[in-house]
Image (cartoon, rainbow, N blue to C red; front, top):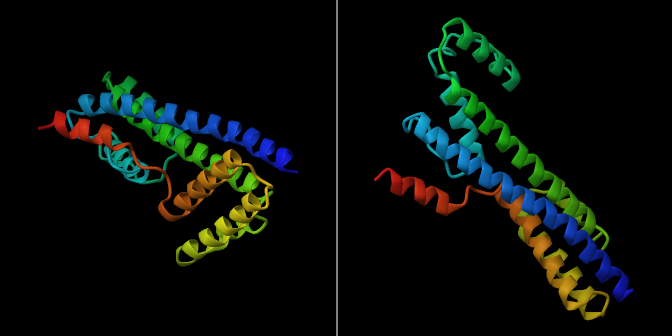
Length: 203
């Protein structure tokens, strides 16, 4: 059982790590393009610390533009793209910056979807060892610390009983930490080095 369970954990981690790499690549693409928008907008748009704040900032940047100020209804990203394309054609102007802003908004949504799918996979795989881990989905923040120690104790027991080898146990702890951090803090923040770079550029 030790070998089978440990092998299953290692196989699961390969899949989880693939999604993790994809998230990092998306983040890198987002930062690269976001810096382009900072320049194009002449600093009207700035890279924010969280994905949520960036979505708010990007949405505001587009909707506060001269061409979108008259819009009263709620529009999807595709509808806004079509609207901007028509406006651009009619008035023979260049809205590259606003199209880029909408593209960045979509990139953030892609990152969020990937993070959600990674957490779902992590919960599913740990569920083979910690049957009650799904309880976290319907729990409040006040319960997370208590739940963490409950889940960790179950992993400790598996390790002490020889049902998990050391490598698989450490992976399980890493996955558990990832899940708990997600439920406490939400989506990952924009890496600090990008924010500092941006702030230093503006000094």
